[in-house]
Image (cartoon, rainbow, N blue to C red; front, side, top):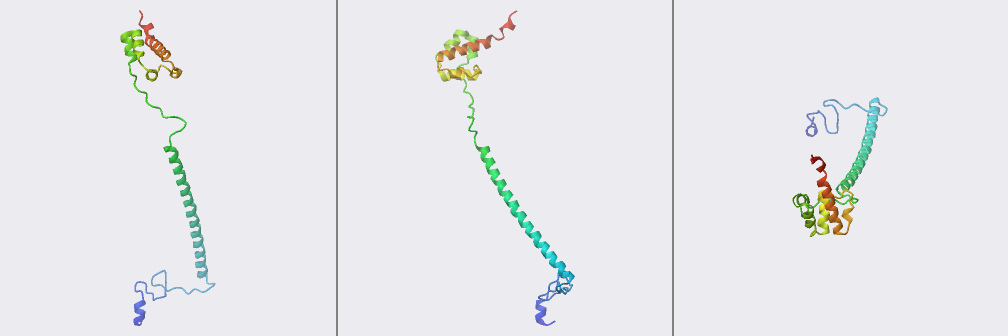
Length: 169
């Protein structure tokens, strides 16, 4: 070997520049058209290209699926985070300004009527809601405070007297 060949040789494979062998220290086979090994290599190249093309198509299909999933996730998040327009959110009922049961128990029917007189419509409706005195939701729509007051007294008395039958001996 001259100096020029030594510079370009690969000591680990034993190959000189321009030579390639997939197996170290093995000479490259002589390939001619029509040779069985050449046909095998060409078939492997064709199959490898077909597999590569198939994988490229699969990558495109998967990326299209991923994009569709991202669209669905965005739509789902928008639906979940959006408040329901059909129903208004329920407000927690405010506590009533008077303790109607306590007044009825301690001061009787007349004391309850006197306690209800200074209250406005909104306060009377709050009592209806707080004590569940309007399950049909009709009294809440009434415009006259006197009518709502009578309803409250009537319903509280009925509730208050509901257990008296069992107390009589």
